[in-house]
Length: 417
Image 1 (cartoon, rainbow, N blue to C red):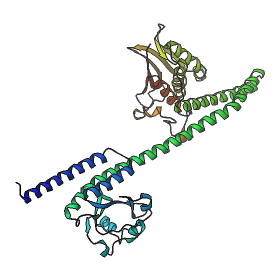
Image 2: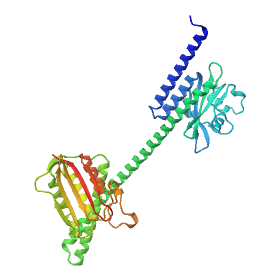
Image 3: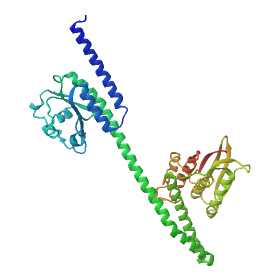
Image 4: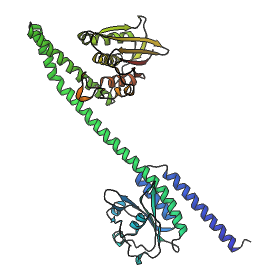
């Protein structure tokens, strides 16, 4: 028959094992959630259970107003507790926070630092208290307290256990805070994007009607005029047409970003798409005396795409080449079959793209030129639209350039039929 000493030792070991398993379980749970409120309740419940005390609480440091505040407490309303500011100076929690050392008090009421306002506010009498700092890196984010030991007094071994819980808790709370801040930032970006898209949609819609009238009357005046008057009407018509192209870009960008774009795919020779795109930009290329060089064969290279939207993407690539090409230079439009893909490219002899900007040129409203010294115009969304259309159809698009003044080549891979 085992002796009383042996039985006591076995029970002690069993208790230690149970506590270790509980701490391991807490660590797993803390690492599996990023919900801050859930974490706080889990930490206080575990601390109260592990130390066999009536309650546990978490006080966090408020950086904007240098003080501590109750973030959570066992069996208490967090909102009610948060109303109670706990000073850094003159309170038990403040002492633990300032000294970054644990504190054991088994007769709290006799300590002048006892902050009775908390007990009075929530109708809870504190008799004994154990508090430890919550370290994160080289800082202290708050204090974890255990209150009213059920059996006997708090001991140094209790402080060791609570310190382990506090260390795990600090990391989990910091991660949850970072996650919440990230979510709030993403939501703010989403709202701003929605406002921007609404503005682009409204502006495009409201400007389209008066612009249509301007184009109509300018065309009418140009037909019936001669000499300088005809030239003036032509300038008005060209400017209005340029503005309509900008409005079309705004509408297309809004459509892409609203996820409302529908694709009507068909199998079509890629050459048909390229010829349609060429028809769209021939006039603007001729105005700058640019030569359009075709580098694709007559034998059909079939692709399965939305013909209208894919044509729009290639038009945007060609417009980009026209805008940044010097007068009397060449723009090459090519296509070739490449395995189960069709490769399309648009090459210009223009200003080129710095190597570190080859990806950024596809970002919306991005301009290589400084805004206060721009020469080439445009909203900086044509390439964004092209990328959106190509990628929505399972294709890829990228830019190549040997640097400033060396021209640029935009390449597109589309799924072949």
